Image (cartoon, rainbow, N blue to C red; front, side):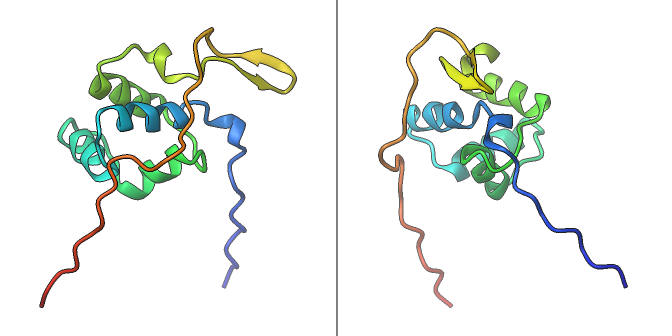
Length: 115
């Protein structure tokens, strides 16, 4: 039986939009579950785990997912990219203010299901 290949983390520079997905979601006071439900209604194959990995930049974002994000947030695709940043010594991004996440937005404790 073959051994499974080790899972290598995605370099964070390969996901430039995760921080802005968090910013736009928090501006609307949506939870991750709220955003996932809206994306699924549009036909996007998304789970809360996938969204969490995108937001924390642990996985890449496909071009199709970016189209869905831009549509659901009612923004231009360019707004998903960071204002300015450095990638291998070169400045990338758009000339806008960078948003940072300092606190959890839309946090609601999960309710325990009663039997």
